[in-house]
Every structure is written in C-alpha cells, then in structure tokens.
Length: 402
Ligand SMILES: *Cc1c(COP(=O)(O)O)cnc(C)c1O
Image (cartoon, rainbow, N blue to C red; front, side, top):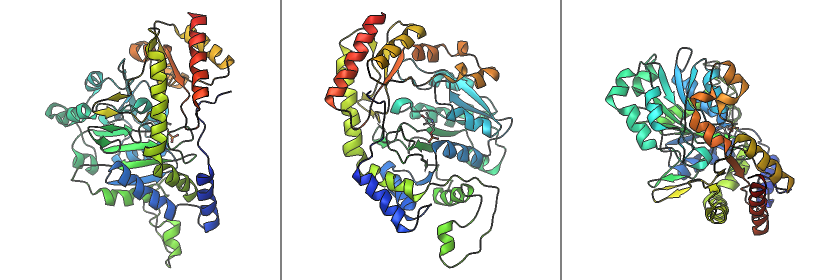
C-alpha cells in the first residue's frame, strides 16, 4: 500500500531527538526558543511562539483579542473543523462563507458581505498551501465603511480599531506572495506541525505575530508565553535559574511545545526550502503533467508569477461527477494499493454544525469542490515508480467508473 503522507523520519531527526532526551531538558527550553527564533527569521514575522498545536494557537489569539459570546468570527465553510471549533470554544459564532471555485479559498466578495457590527475576526484558511488574497482581505478590514462598523469591546480591540485578520496557515508554511512569506501577510498567522503537515514535530504549532505598529509584538510574545502556561509568570526553565518564586496572573492554558518536538522542528526547518519544498514541488509538477492532457481532470492552482504554494495537498478534481461516483473511484484506487483522501468535508455537512443550523445548501461551491475532489499522496520519500503507480491507479479507476 502506498501511504498518503507518512512523516520523514531519518537519522538526522532521530539523532536530534535522542540528543534532547539525553540533555536532561525535555519540556519547553533552549530548543523551543531556538526553533521560535529560526521560524521568525524564516517567515520574517516580528515574533513567533511555538505551541503544542495550531488549534491552541488559534484559540489563544482569539482569547487574547477578547472574542466571546455575542461576537462573530468569519471562517470558510471549506476547512478542517479546528478553524470553527476554536470560535465555538470562545463562546462566539462562526459565520461560514462559501469558497472560490478555482482556489478552494474563502470567497472574498462573500466574506465582505458577511461582515456585521458583531464581526471581531476573520480566519482565512490557506487551503492546501495556496495563500488567500490577503491584499484584498486587508483592504476590506481597513476600509472606512468596514472600520466604522467595528464595535470594540475592550482595550486591545480599541487599539487595533478594526477586525483582526488571523490566517489559518496550517498548510502554508513557506508559501510566498509578492516576495512575502506566509507569516507576514495577516496580523497573525498560525502554522501546524501535526504529523501530516509539511513540517512536522509530531504534534505542534506556532503563532507568527505581525501586528501593526501600535502593538509591541515582543511584549505580546511574552504575554502569550504566560497565557499558554497557566498564566504562570515564570516557566520551568526560568525557575531553575535561581528564583523559585512565581505568580499566576490569569487562568491560562497549558499548550506549550516541548524541546523534543522542537528538536524535530529544527532539523525540518533547516532543510525545508532546499529539500522538502523542492521535492513536494517535483511531485506536484509530476501529477500536473500526467493529468493535464486529460480533460476529465481539473488541476489545482499552485504556482503563479507572484504567488507560489507550499505544495501541501494536491487537490485533484474529476470533472462532472457526483459524490457517489467520487467515493466509488476512491474505493477502486484504494483497492489498487494507493491511499488517497478528501480534503475536506465542508463543515456544514458534519453532524455538529448541522445541529447548529448550518446547511450545505447555503455553500454550493464548497459542495461542488468537495464532491469532485481526491487528494493524492505527497511525501518526501515518494519514488518515481510509486508516482507512476498512483497515476495509473487513478486514471484506471476513473475510466472504470465513468
Ligand atoms: C491541521 C489543521 C489545523 C489544526 O492543526 P493542529 O496542529 O492539529 O491543531 C487547523 N486548520 C487546518 C486547515 C488544518 O489542516
């Protein structure tokens, strides 16, 4: 069976993890701090904070901004549940917006129409590693008509004076628009280092801070370290340095990254551009070449003159098929020894969101993209022979069903 997306675990990773285990320091410590510094250098963000997941990062930032009951946060209908669940955790309402046909990303025109005086934040999702149009989204939240609607409820919201733009950048580490990397395109960007993501620390995530000049991003970083560690004003490492006494300033969360995770991240980041992304791009090009000649298929967008993807998921679509036909094609592909997936089931199709009243009929493009979509294997150790096996399995299965 050709797997879908196994992590790249080689001697370099193993040795760095063993080094951490032997160092005597396994929780948040020197490696996490170094990984944060390297991530900030890599992305260009003003500051980066590492955590145990992207979900934790998204929620921490909503909590910092004071998002609560009665507030609305705009999210795409086509995403992983984490994007909407963090809004619900805060007691606020996710306002779902349909997506674009070509990019799978949030439809910016519809996003604009969804803004109300209750809107506190927008969480665009860079689907499959393709960046949203942040120029347009930033222009919308800064436009006088929209800032006039904004109703701040606390000092931080007053200080920003507009809707917060927080990128769900779980897929887009290393993606570039107009020479700028994911991490500096929105106020805040949150990366995921979960096992299936481009860069993995087994579980993990990071917040990249890029708030405008009226905010001290370094001060905010320090505050978020406290908020992510029970509101305790000194972490374990600081306490070893002579002064045991600490205070708790708020009922914070417990979402810090460990040095074991950071050890993996440091190895992965070092080889990310020249090795990981190169290989992923090679795989994307391979699939694109194989499927482009055949008018049964719709290829994902992944490179344009001013914008390059992080090549996270290859979202292949089969033209004019029903959901049942797609599922049958997948069954046949798997039978031929190839693991594929679907990214994602639009949220309004899932029980919990249905129970809240969301209805997929209100998101026709999300459904249209979903019903035709098959995500193909993309991982570092894929061989040319495996790539050809995958392509053949897909083409044959599609021919069998259609
Ligand atoms: C993976 C993923 C997340 C969550 O990341 P975790 O690190 O597992 O919390 C959030 N949003 C999207 C779009 C994802 O794919």
